[in-house]
Length: 293
Image (cartoon, rainbow, N blue to C red):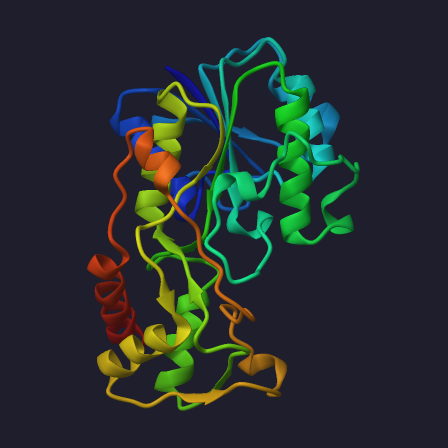
């Protein structure tokens, strides 16, 4: 198949490209070029700023795709542009969405808890919205206006050794360095997925005849208290936890006021089998502790 991937030079996007190459597809990546091309001659690269509408349209002129993956759409304006530019050019779009489309209200999230088909669209650029609202608006535009099938893959926090956001690294480093971590609710449970499994589900969403929103997360959830305990056990050091106050540098990037996790039942019913969180998270923590000690 001919596959276009917007974004794809780092983290789970890079693993998605690798997976498509391994399965024998013709892959084109579209990036700003800031991270180079780690795939060499195995892919074709288009160097474009996706927010430059004219340049994007020109780059994709006279092309057709079996699947387009959009990992870097954060606003309704970007979603509308890709709907218009790809009209008649692709058989399917897979959009990387997020757990942040759901409210943090302590309840396990199912796809119907946010309905993009009924959501009121408010156009604007990325900087005009929070991350979650930008993704909600993008989903609404894609599902209402695209002339081709769309899958929105809602990921929780993605973990991996190569995570450029270094959110799990933050907690390991602070504990190793005896620095304080501020958490608003240490008992709040969250969902996670590995970068490798995120790439595998994106691939599945592209090649399987599914449409609509799908949660993609490892099975199980873990409290921040238990996650901190895993790091303490692996490092042999105690965390300095504060539940209030603290300076900006101590604020946990996992800090949420209530449980915030999702069900993967819909995706598993569609045929994808997810890992168990408890089978890989302790190993990842141990690996990071050894790397950062």
